[in-house]
Image 1 (cartoon, rainbow, N blue to C red):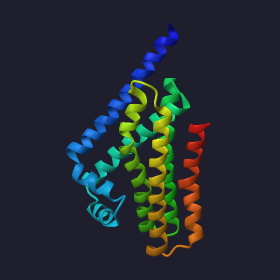
Image 2: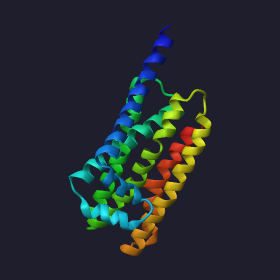
Image 3: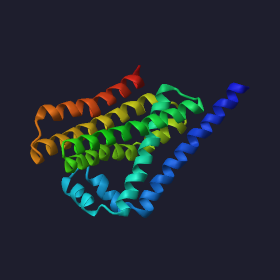
Length: 213
């Protein structure tokens, strides 16, 4: 009986997280879609990224915050699902880990930019690095909903679909970061390769390994 109660309780937790996720989407679509559209189109064309970065106002800051929260919730729900976590404290801990990871990456890039006097490069690196993660968090929303509340278990199929999306956006991210580093700032390719392996590829490999094994 206690096990059944705990399962129902944590199912309510997942429902609340998904409800918050779709509330964030409603806010983005209803109030900030003009700026959010620029953000998501930046994935495919640099001119949209340039326009979004030029605006840099209160609206773009709100879009950045809302998409960051959406990304954190959806990534947490995926990790929790494939790790089969049901304890409330572990769910909260997983959510904090996701948020702290991205915040640490942001702090690391900003610190390196300050130390080597590349503040403009650090700003662009943070933007393009989080851009693809935030876009992925937005796109994954319907998959996460089906993952938890579909009428039958399709988690394995959704894992494949999620991995395809992750790999596609990862390739785009690596392309943009490599292009910015080499063509716009003339950085040595070895340094760019080390950054991409350390802060972009390696964490993803850990996540995929954890989800599969």
